[in-house]
Amino acid sequence: MARGASFADAGGLGQSFAGVIMPSLFEIVAHTPIWVWLVMALVLWLGVQGLRPRVVPVWRPMLPLLPLVALTMSLSAVAHALQPDLALAIWTAAFVLALPLGHAIGRRRSVRRTEDGQLEIAGGWFALVFGVSIFAVRYALGVLFGVAPALAHQPFWIGLSAAVGGFVSGVGVGWFSGLLMQIRRPFVPAE
Image 1 (tube, rainbow, N blue to C red):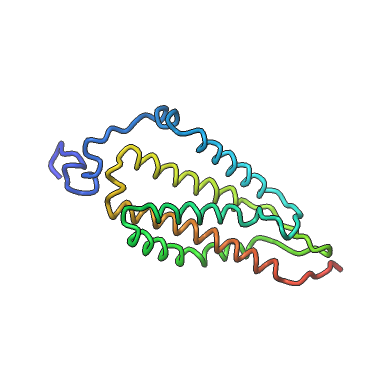
Image 2: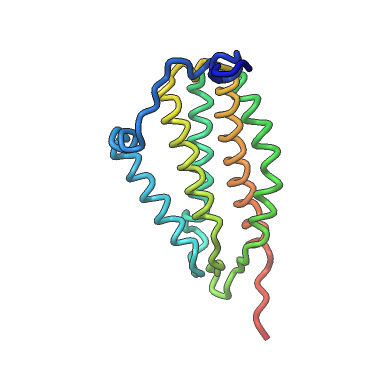
């Protein structure tokens, strides 16, 4: 690259950002809709709940909530992508690759059925890290596509967004399946 040439002049990925003026952090935060901050508060609340050990009824839907949110959000993004076939193919590959990782993480979490049929679940960092990761990545991509809307038309960015969504969903679903494997074990009373 010639001295003094910009990244955008190099004909590389920077071409997408030619003429784009990045707003300040204050402008980004100020123009974020209120509902986004409410979602962040919910994600943080759910994550903090996951830090402490608890006993919950089997029917309680809190365990799969974050993986279901990730799955729903990422599939919605795939459906709304400008090239949904490309997005679905990349999403599926990332999802399948991430399942074993999530399953291994879920299997490490201590879960057991109590005598009265409830679930005793150890506390852990997964829900907090998982939820904040989903939020941060979706927020960053939303800001990026808001500042440079032309990126949403480019196969690289469509694929990247789909891959992130598929990976996060795969980890979440794998994690939940790992927890289910722990729950299926029969109750063994302490001696």
